[in-house]
Image (cartoon, rainbow, N blue to C red; front, side, top):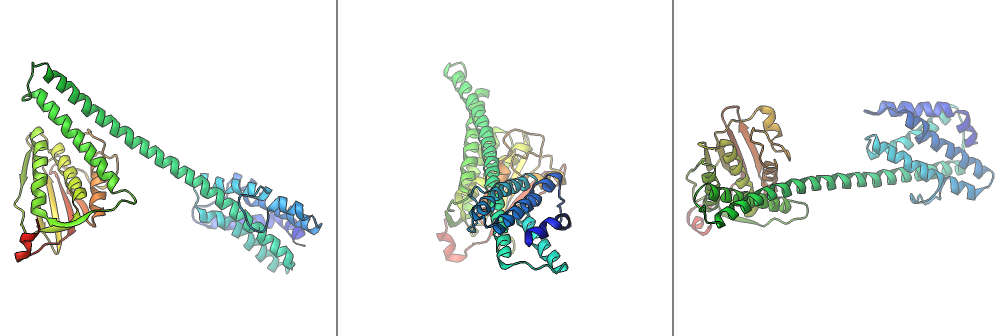
Length: 385
């Protein structure tokens, strides 16, 4: 009988299961698994087979559950399998490892029975399969449920952290603006001067944070892009005006090279505006007082390349690799959230483009937005405005 076979050769079956687990990359059975997991499942399987051998069907179902494999059942096997699945999640294993653990036992029983020429009845095999199915279902259900909770908690934490940083930045800008406005209202200071400049900087900072937040929402899951083909020269004129205001506030030079009126791109204009705006703000920030930022665009092998060049301190190779990660700030100026470049890259990629950077310490940075060329020629060019 199968239950006698399992009891007699239990130590060998557990050894074979441990061996199979150890042979998989990154897996080795720990004390918790040795005491629970497959050993506990074997106990319940043996007791189930014994109950069925006595004709105690209700006891068998209480131990291992119905043949439907309902993971929500309250059988002993469902409860212990749920613990095993949750334990594997805690230890950092994937869901396929949960299934493998039960498959290891099935294979060990089959192999050992062949080695010892042991024959089981069809009913015993059905019971074994039912227990394996219910065990896998319970473990996978618990693993998935706990994993979903972990992911939800992590996402909630990240969202709260991002909102906290954003609220902090908005509050700082708003507080400065209110103080500057209060000083101006007294009549002792005017709009032209340090106080007016402080008000300007605060309002520009508020606009920047709001623009970034809107861009981040628009590139989120489920959002629809509003793509159109538009003139790159006209687009650059629009961004030149708003960017010039910030460059003036920081006393940073801003040079825009002539753009061919024939150049066009197919993109979501607002997202591209946000991406290029973030790159220019970053360039002004690190070039600083007396620095120079250059904006240019050209076509290279059917690709439009929009370039932002600054003469800031530049970045190390490691800093270049990390700079597009959220909440990363690679330079000495640590103002802001460290989200601008991350949002800029995602905005460009949402438009089917690439955002790259070239930098050497002491020689500034060159950011390149690479998009498909949708340029027109001749008479059609005048219609793309």
